[in-house]
Structures are given as C-alpha cells and as structure tokens.
Length: 368
Image 1: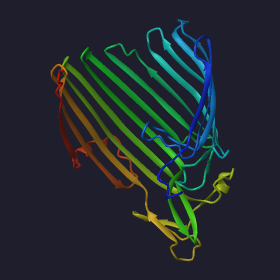
Image 2: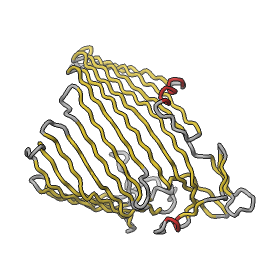
Image 3: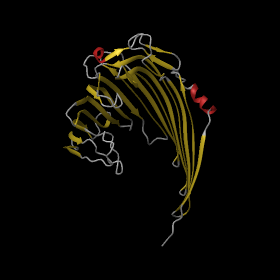
Image 4: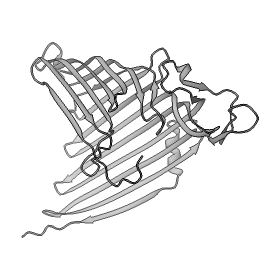
C-alpha cells in the first residue's frame, strides 16, 4: 500500500454480445477492472483487480404451451481471475427452469449450482488468497398471482461442500395483502442456518510469524419484514417499514492456516487441539505447549437482536408543495454466547432501550 498517494487511477473494460429474442437465446461477456479503479463519486463498484468471462444459453417459449403461459430452460457459467492471472473460481449452473403458468403463478428452479474451484481474496482479511473447497447448492421459488387481493411467495435454498453433509439452508415466505386499491400490506419471514467450517476469527503474531485463525461457525438468523402503504387521498399517504431480526453464531473447531493454497484441506489447516483453551469470554493459544500463552483473543460467539422501523407521512398541502413527517425507531443488543433465541427473542426486543428520531421537511413551490 502506498500511503502517500492522494488519488487512484485505473480502468474498466467490458464487452457483451448475444441474442435475446427468439426460441434460442445466448449471451457472452468478458470484463476487466484494473487495480485502483475507483468510481465512488459516480457509482458503485463491488471489487477491482479482476477479470471475468462467462455466458449463458437458453431455450425459451414466449407463447402458451401446455400448462405454461411462458417458460425457459437455461444454463450459465462464469470464471474469474485476478489481473495478475491467478484463477479465482469457476461457477456453473448446468440447468435452470423459469416458468409462468396459465393462472399466473410462477416457479423458478435451479436443481444444481456448482462452484468447481475458488480462491478467496477476502477470507483472510488482507492476507493471502485462500483456497475454498468446491461446493454446490439448489433452490426453488414459487409465487402466486400478484394481481389477486392476497398473493404469496415461498421458497428455499440448500447446499454445501462436495463430500460433506449439507452445511447451509434457508427458507422464506412472503404474503402480500391488498384489501383495496389504496392499501397494501406485505409480511416477509426468512430463516437461515449455516455451518461454515472456515469462518474468519482473527490474526495474531506468534513466534514472529503472522497466524491466521479460523473456526467452524454454526449461525442461525431469523428476520421478518413488515411493509404497509396507505394512500388516503391523492395528496395524503402513509408508509411504514419494520424489521425485527435475531441472529446467533457459535464457534468451534479452531484452525490455523498452514498452506492457504493447498489442495487437500488437511494440508491447508492445522486443527487446534490442546493448543487452545477457551472460557466464557476468551481463548488462549499455547502453540508449542510449553505452558506459556503465545496469543489470545476474545471469544467470538455472539447473540444479536435488532428492531428497525421507519414511518413516513406525506401531505401535499397545495399542488407542488409537500410536508414530510418521518419517524425512525431502532433498538438492538449484541451479547456474548451463541445460543439462538428463535421467535421468543422477538419479544425480548421490546425490553431494550430505543433510539427515536423525528424529522419534518417542508417544501413550497414558487410559481414563476
């Protein structure tokens, strides 16, 4: 890192070509973002210093066929490298299916998504690239006709590493209620469970060497979103959004990175045994088992609760002139311990201290 620099420079290149109409459709793309490329003042760029190629092929029917109003079958893939030429990963979806039924229900299915190879530049938080085992996942989404007074959507996602038991899944359900043309209420709930055997914990110096410490985390998250819109008159409307969330993470099986690019997981990591001892608040490492603590860190297990809500009243008191009244509410707690509270933890939210903000904005249009 050059700490004396005050500006960044770089470039972004991309090329896309394909056919997006007809029964057979295809698309290919390639792109390259140089290191130092930063457009923060003009837009958003997720990552730089990498190059990507990919494409997809689809068979699509836009006219009613059998039970379907329309459908498509497709496959897709992409690969990434650093701009130095180091392969970062190859992702592939051998088959996917999207369809709208004649009753306007819809379904999206991806029975298999595969990451054949991956090296992560982020896993070690500024350290070297870390090889990650190949993984797969599958998902399905189903939605009813959104034109109806009550519409629903639900689905799930499951996956994990090849050769291991499934290590993550999530399910969700959404309900949209529209009792009148001016009122709609949306309720959304999502639950996810994840067992990641290579979660970042910390970095420590032991015997004049930087050691990257990871662990297995069992994480659970439950969140609900509530959205209410009411247009009382063309000039008066009310909107409400609220999101209660609870999450927990329990850590175990602490690892030290030995060879971050080793093909075999046993060669990539050293699994701590008697070298690490943890109590309720911290963990101590005695790497050479000489009875002296070489490094320590706070125990990372956590339990998090949060409630965020925003309400906005909009009143156009004269044409072109508007009053906004906005209320923001928040309460949260971060506590040690990896026990998941589930639905019962939602009730605990109302016993926490809260922050409330009231904003009023008035605008008046001057006709010239």
